[in-house]
Structure formats: C-alpha cells, structure tokens
Image (cartoon, rainbow, N blue to C red):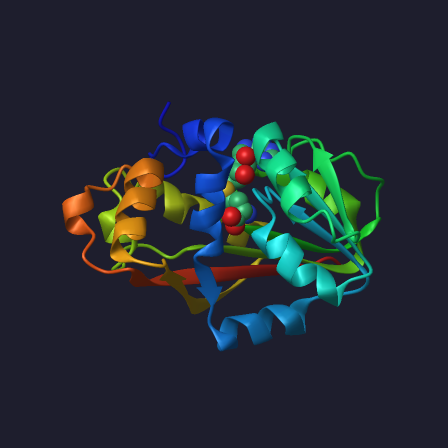
Length: 220
Ligand SMILES: C[S@@+](CC[C@H](N)C(=O)[O-])C[C@H]1O[C@@H](n2cnc3c(N)ncnc32)[C@H](O)[C@@H]1O
C-alpha cells in the first residue's frame, strides 16, 4: 500500500526493519539544527512520537532522565529494543500516536521526525500529555530539493497542508538542512529504491542535502 510519501515505507517497516534503520541512521542533522533542537528541549522526560527504530530517541536520550519511544509498528520497536538494549533510559510504547498511553501533564518534550499519524487527534493527545511549559518539536521535509526530487510519488500539497495544520495549532516555523549520507552509492541506490521506490539510475551520489522545516510549540 502506498501512503505518506507515496512510498513503500509501510511494507519495509513490517518486513525489513534493518533496511529502515539504515535509512533513518543516514540522516545527520546540521550543527545549526542540532543546537536549535537542544536549545528547545525542556525538562527531564522525552517522548519520541512515531520513533521508528529509535535512531533519534537514542541520540537525544542523553539530554533527558527518561525517554519514551512510541510507535505503531511492532517490528520497528522490537528492532530498536534489541539495538539499544544497553540504553536503559528508553521505554518503548507500542501504540498509535492518536491514543498515547501516558498520563496528562507527564511529558516535558515531544520530538517527531518524519512522523506520520492521524494529525488532529495526535495534536490533541500530545497537548494532553505535555506539561505546561512543555515543548513539541517536529521536523519534516520542506518541499522539493535534491533529495526529495528523487521521490516518485511525493505529494507536495499534502506536505504543505500538514505544515499549515501544525502552524494553525500554534507551532512556529524555522528552516534548516539535514545531510543524508549513505556508505556508498550502491547502498543509497538499494535503500532508496526499496524504501522510496526511487529509480536506481537517478541515484548518482551517496549524499544529499534535505531542506527541512522545524516546527515547535510551547504549551502555556
Ligand atoms: C518515516 S517513519 C519515522 C521514524 C523515525 N521518527 C525516524 O526519524 O526515522 C514514520 C513512523 O511513523 C510510524 N507510524 C505510522 N502511523 C503511526 C501512528 N498512527 N501512531 C504512531 N506511529 C505511527 C511508523 O510505524 C514509522 O515508524
């Protein structure tokens, strides 16, 4: 089934968590973006919504006392559980983002990257579990760039509609870049064709610059 970016993501989540993990781990935030995200972090408890294989949950958990990693995919979470078994800060939540199994006012920072979920319900749920003064940080693609132009089915209207929805909820917007770096062109061709349905012939580099939008919200 083609959803989200119009891709094979969901088949890969189910059957090839390892492939998805290579894709997720190929993302390197610019120093500017990393510093900004760290500046926005609030408090001791992190919730990574739609965490996938927890590449970012693991990276960011060092700035918190406890991290919750929530995802609807059992296979991605079990891959992460095994990969990060030494990280005892991470607590895994197999759940939809639209029904977060946490108490009201119990999370200080919510992080989302490349997340997909029912937006209106999830925004309400995130706001419920967030403490007053808490923050939600969302990173998503900006639009067309030398990475996303490879996607055969990117729905730009949907991308913009989602950004607008966050903004109308009270999110502020800033623009940054993320480097996508694979070990080799061959690896880039393999991963991008399997996950995004990219035509291998179009992949002539192992690195890309992805323009991203950081959206953040502070609960009053
Ligand atoms: C593109 S991945 C992003 C994963 C991770 N945040 C990253 O940066 O690599 C999108 C994730 O959303 C998850 N997802 C899709 N629908 C969801 C829902 N309703 N609730 C929670 N997670 C969901 C998928 O299982 C997948 O892990």
